[in-house]
Structure formats: C-alpha cells, structure tokens
Image 1: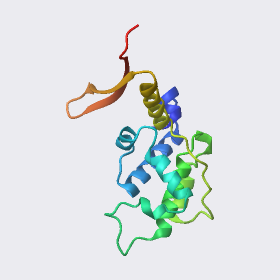
Image 2: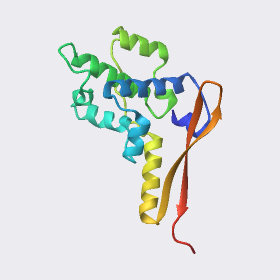
Image 3: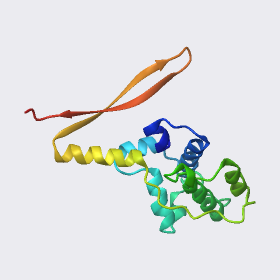
Image 4: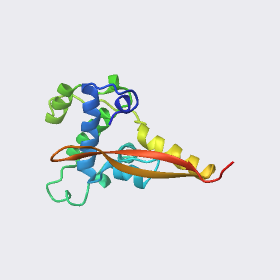
Length: 167
C-alpha cells in the first residue's frame, strides 16, 4: 500500500496507482512484495526493480515462466517503467489512471523517467533489523486474524519489539 495510506490513512486514486505499480512488478517478477520484504529486510521488489532498471538489466527481472520466443523486451521495459512511475513516493508525482492507460496502449508520446522510489515498508523493516542487532531487541512477527466474515478472513501483520535484556 502507498505510504500516504499506510502512515496517514489518506486514500486517493493515486493510492490505487501505487498498488497497480506493485501488481505489475509482482506479475513480471513472479514475486510477492510482502514476502520479499520479510525475507530480505530493508529490500523490496520495488527497490530491486529500480536497481535493475536503472542498471539496464531489466530482462533479468522476468520470471522464467514468462520467458519464451514471444517475450518482447521493449514491452517489459515499458511495463517496468510505467510501474516505477506509479510507485513514486509523492502521490502528486504519480501519473493519473488515464495517462497509465495511454502509456500501456502505446498512445502516449513518451513515458516519464521515474526517480528512485523509497518504499517505506522496506525502510521500516531495515530500521527494525538494525535496532534488533544493535540493541538486543528481538523482533517477532505476529500474524493474527482480526476480521472474519462468513466466507473470508482478513489478516493484518503486527510487529512487536521485545527487549531481551532487562534493566
């Protein structure tokens, strides 16, 4: 979810575009951002996509199930660049939905060059990991079912910090 929603609970059409950008990356890479962030604290598929795109080796991001003779490198590059535009930190820097549709259809003259996104969740996990290693704090993830309905349940992740050493 976008930082403005996660931190301030401000929702807009630009928040949806942030999520759309993450979904594009998850499809291209066949990786879930949440699991990737938890497996590599301080990193995310957003950061990985930026590093790889900025380094010019964007085809290495494509999951092996999508690689065949029909893979068009220019289309991967276009989708990756659109995703990175949708993932800009400031909501005002993200394109609107109409622009994204035009870019995907190839009817936009050019796709803006994105700047490096600083994904707040991976930064938060990096700070927790640093705090855990430097001050003997044990960080444990607890996942609990908070809302249940007849057909589905929604889970939220909560992080608790426990100090191992007492005073």
